[in-house]
Length: 302
Length: 330
Image (tube, rainbow over all chains, first blue to last red; front, side, top):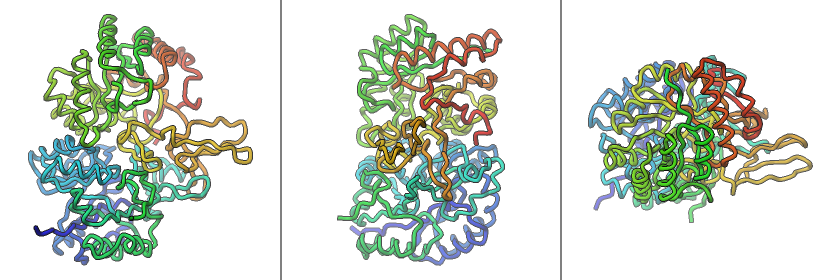
């Protein structure tokens, strides 16, 4: 049996970066042969969407011309009528799309293929099977699911591709309230887009100055940076077919190269961690969720 | 305008009776296993207790809603299906469900069983609600606590199903069902385990006269002598952003929207809901009686203000907010 290589996918950019940075980022990704697929689109805050529409449309063309699979991602927590319209417009297009909120399914043409994003609550084979019956071809697993749980889920859903959130600050929570605005004494409706000051999120520390969380508008992320260092055989055994790398401001080329080598079995878990640490990530490495532990923990590979 | 239905928590058969005797129109409860989000020792109902409770409630004109509102554990979905079967057998008036797989099972196996969509499903938009109604036959949606009263009104004008809104008790500041803060720190969370900031991960330590609360080793708050020390729920902790200490996500408050009942009625909600199946029969008797009095006043066209004092000293941590129902909360 030939083993197909584990795909590398670049997740949707979660942060509010300036136009030039976004354009440069995707130009760089287009030149990365190690990347198979790129998710584009504003997932966190509908207010940011219009700022980046042109940069993302250009990126889509560049990435597609470079042979990448481009998948548009929908907003995770629609708040305004225009958020609904944005989700409806993406979902109604029969091209592959990542659905991050159940409202996307309402507009999906019957049977059109979609990716179920990690912000949907799919925790078992019955729920995943429901989505498959409606066109789901790939599940980017909820970050809380352990690898043993994923193995059972994928065994119960033959044919479902499984993508794993393998790199980046973990998307932990969404709220109706904007914490970036709140931290500056502002209100969501008049936020002045202060989230653009923190390209990897605003660090939230405990009163003892220990890094804990990171705020990104209405989203709360982990301070720790997920690095799934599980060997590729074990990932395949759990049904994983792709690794998702979430964009950060550090040296993504190094990070992509590290995960490509790791996924190809050319890098030990310890060497992968060392490579990622060398890129100066915004927090300590974590991987507890994959092993059924608290997400903030780092379990050294045995 | 039809009267608003008052839905109260019942963590036990005794609490169910207390709630109904105090004026609840409906109670919600769970079976004694991991299929409900308050799976605590000493709480909840056996299938037989549920049957008896439903008969008792029906004899008094009250309804029983059964919460099967956790996400099924992978490989163990049959436990959740069995809970749906048990609720149907007991004659429950509705089940409250969040998991897509369980919704599909209930629709197919018990087409006459009324389906309510749990707040954990986080259906806060017209399109999401429409899809749950069309695909699974959901008849009522428990609204996420991220919506303002005007937004609920707009929603109700455009959807074809009933809505239920939380008005009293614990307050999630994150979209329910979309929050993994607790498992990030402790390994257990509402979606994974039916608990948030679980007690076994909590510690309090006296450090040079100051009481420090921690969750799984993360400091959540520090209290000066004389300051009231609340339970360290993760999103109600005091944190540093840019070095400035604050209750960044939310103050240690709980929800009290009695003052907004008239607005919620105008917004077209069918039912209002009290949180707290873990809080016992004395608690539910007081809260149910207070909201019964306020809703009856509303039906007579009178203000609810005179009844707000009936709820004093009941809030966890002692402080209250109307939360997202007021748009300024954002």
